[in-house]
Amino acid sequence: MDTFGQTLRFQNIDFTADTKSTLKGASLELAAWLLKPIIIEQLQKRLLVNLTPQFEKAKADANKLVSKLQFPPPLQLKFNLGQLQGQEIAVYGDTLFLDFDASGKAEMVF
Image (cartoon, rainbow, N blue to C red):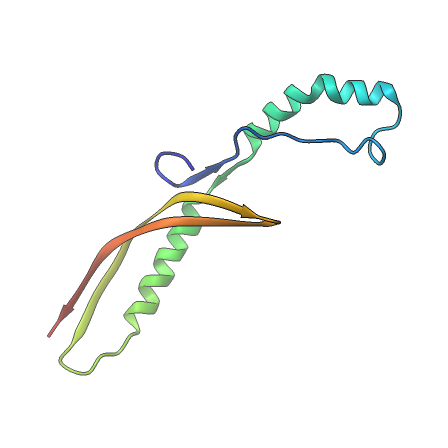
């Protein structure tokens, strides 16, 4: 995650080529080996995911859902989820999990 927790970056990546199914012959295997640093550099440049739109939608959805909560009179909840910020990433199998911090203001009035 970047310092603002809004952009997902993949660094220190690597790849392998399955020579049995994708490369035919020693010359292509050598080419893949020689081009590996260039391929990795290009992957890192392109593997950027801006999460700002998803965070903005999640905040709006959360605020909308909380606004529908009903409390017995005269209680009333004032709630505003102000910020979501990505903190950590975990990968398990083919699933990516994102841990994030949420901040805002909640007030119960009567």
